Length: 83
Image (cartoon, rainbow, N blue to C red; front, side):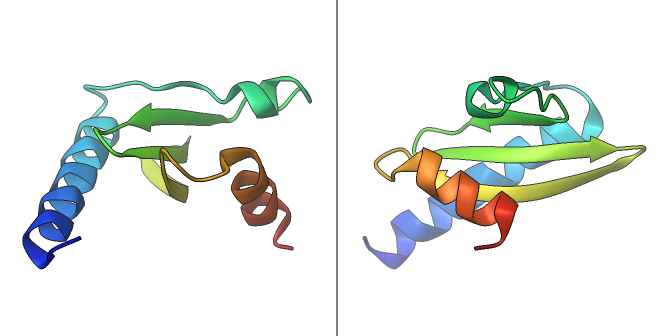
C-alpha cells in the first residue's frame, strides 16, 4: 500500500466518523454482539474498513477499525475483552 492510498483510507475513515459523530450517519448493530445481547455498539463501513463504535451522550468512542479481509470476530473479541 502506498502512502497516498494510506492517506486516502485514513481520510475516508475520518470522514465517516465525522458523519457518525454529527448524527448524519447511523450504523447498524454488530451481529456478533447482538447474538450475546449487547446492543450498545454499532458499525459502519468505508470502502476498505469496518468501524465499530459506541455513542455515549455526545461522544463517539471507536473500539476497532478492521480491514474487510481481517478475521473480524477474533479481532472484535480481543479488542472488547482486551485479551
